[in-house]
Amino acid sequence: MRDGEASVLTVRPHDSLTDRASTLEGLPFGPFDPDGHRTFELALREFVQRQARFDLGFVEQLYTFGDKGRDAPLADVGAGGARVISVGYLALAPAATDTDAPDAAWSSWSRFFPWEDWRRGRPPAVDEVIAPALARWAGASDERRNRVRLLFALDGAPWAEERVLERYELLYEAGLAPEAARDRARAQGGRPAEPAAFSVALGEPMISDHRRILATGLGRLRGKLKYRPVVFELMGDAFTLSALQKTVEAIAGVALHKQNFRRVVERTDLVEGLGRMDVETGGRPAELFRFRREVLGARPAGGLSLPLLRD
Image (cartoon, rainbow, N blue to C red; front, top):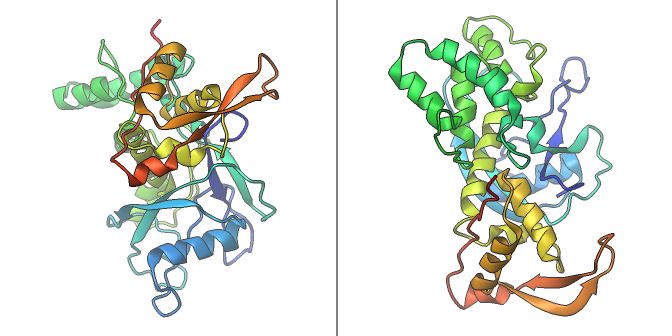
């Protein structure tokens, strides 16, 4: 969390020919050295520390990305144009620690997926920009129209916050994601240019297929919130219930009912009061809590249900 937003660590890789940083952000990435790296995870931790000067905490393997034709960042450098397979990881940190690494920064995920942030209600861009564009793409196809309706909560369909990847892939398939034009150019044998100017409603593009990887990670994290106590990996040693709620809301992209959320937390028996107050909230002092990590070794621990704040 940084300034009230769930943030992702990004880098701007340098072009090997010009030695200039990319104009687009990407996720930290690097090659696996079978001789120098004992495991994939150790390789991950090493190149993230080297690129961003940041030490990772919680890490879990996410997915393997190897679709034919993907614009892999190392495909033309040092690999002879060979097909590149990328193993993605989801990593969580309790604080967005400042990094002094050049071209590394913490960026709110909503910059890349603005249609996913429903904390202040339904984003106007869904109905004003995205839905009309997808309607033109869907045409008379019932299958396409139904996918659009279900994924973007049209015509009374409920919003399913964990389907981040499916929504991004639908925008990509419809040619609305800026990366789609770049990848088509590559498939046709041209040199892929960085995505052109984009609509704010469609989010900022990233290098390669990193926005797809980020969508996979965000969707996985949103799903895990409900069945594993993973949100506590993003909290410090002491926190208020208000800070915990804001963290869940920032990840899930939805507003929660305050009293009902606190009841949910109390029922899980995963937190306990520390007997002291946080006086730096800028308002009424709030009680501090801690995550009962010892519970994880004693019994299976679930996640937190999301009691939505209804209009």
